[in-house]
Length: 113
Image (tube, rainbow, N blue to C red):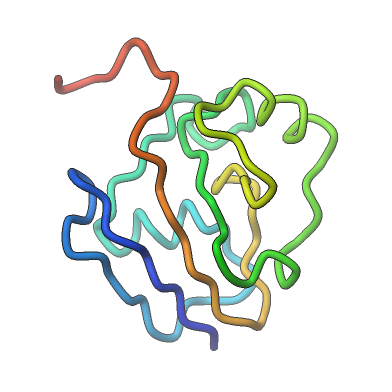
């Protein structure tokens, strides 16, 4: 099973994290949430927002291809670059990933803040 390395994020994961034996076939968003990394997911993982936007710094080619809907939504994401994906739509393959969670999202209605 692959490993996911999460780069440090100021509030969600200040020291970074390593998730050993991550389950292939599961979304990156679910894996992060299952491991107490509370990434935003305002649309409840239905591919209707960009709050779960991540950068796949390594392993991009090992995950599923983005759908047209995901690509259209990513155009609205803060800090978009060539390795951007919505974590709720990114299905882990058999290779390790290095994930960076952007500092900001476009969520203007954060709960608990």
